[in-house]
Amino acid sequence: MPGRLKTAVRLATAGVLVTGMLAGAPTDALAADATADGTATAAGACKIGAGSVTAGGDHTHRVITAGSPPTVQEKSRYTDLFPEGLPRLSTLYIHDPVVPGYGGAYGGHVVIGSGLYSSSYFLTEAGEVARDQSHNFRVGGGWGDATFLESSYPYDTDPWALVNHYALRSNGTITRWDSKGGFGWTNPQSAGGFSAVKTMALISQTATYDTFLATTRGGALYTIRLPLTSPMKPVVKRVRSSTWQAFDALIAEKCGQYGTLLLGIDKDTRSGYLYAVGHANGTATVIKGLGKVPATFADPVHFRDTAEPGIAPPLYGE
Image (cartoon, rainbow, N blue to C red; front, side, top):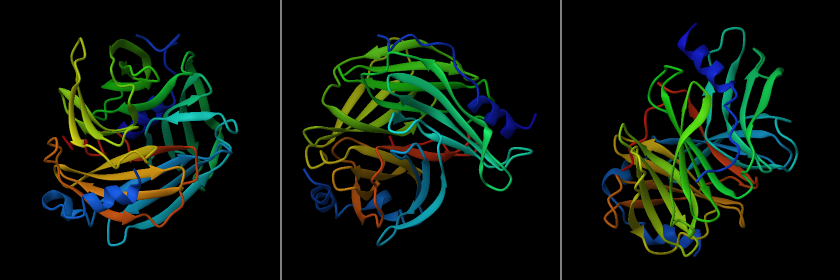
């Protein structure tokens, strides 16, 4: 079976039951970091795949390219994938464009109501959703208090390679689970103390740690490094102390060898702002505001749209 088809099959596989979750304004941020240099200034060719789940249960896809100003390419919209009004959270979605007999496939995880689901859909060769291959498999319940969800896939086409899944609960607990081949969310490792976090984005993936960039309700910006050890002991560094509180969602993509292209989404104003972020190093981190994205961000759920494991380069923003 070709490697890409293996990936698509992995995306469509339901996990083992999880019974519960174990144990300022954007313009201010732009102005504050407008003089950044170094890695952050070389973002002109960098792009972010930004997806969303609409209130009606559709998927939208767009590509945002860094520039002065940023530009947006609207991509396909796939309808009626989820029950209307119920999806609350989403991990990244992986896109496999080459699946024999189909026009590609997408897969990820979503929280629908209080349940966690493994979600996938295949496309026909005409580019429409293959309705007999569009599935939301229930993984488990007890996710009503989850406020953030993400997955970190290795740079490996092997469908049995280790995947790390992350969730943040409203009580401030971050939990990581292991998964291989889509089977099971196992070996949960948790750490508390993150109740001030509003949203996060994965910015770094290595063999020994994953790192998230996080905003707080008070407006601060932090990196949270989560070593792939047991017990999990986070390493937290402040990047900025204020002006980041408006963002309800963050999407990050690799930019250059060490940097990050960051999209901040303000749901109240339905606006998105783009930043070039140098390799994270606490308060010395270089951040350059690239401007307001010429698009409307009106949907309730946003996610990173990326290529399949082994094709998309690993993030290395910290």
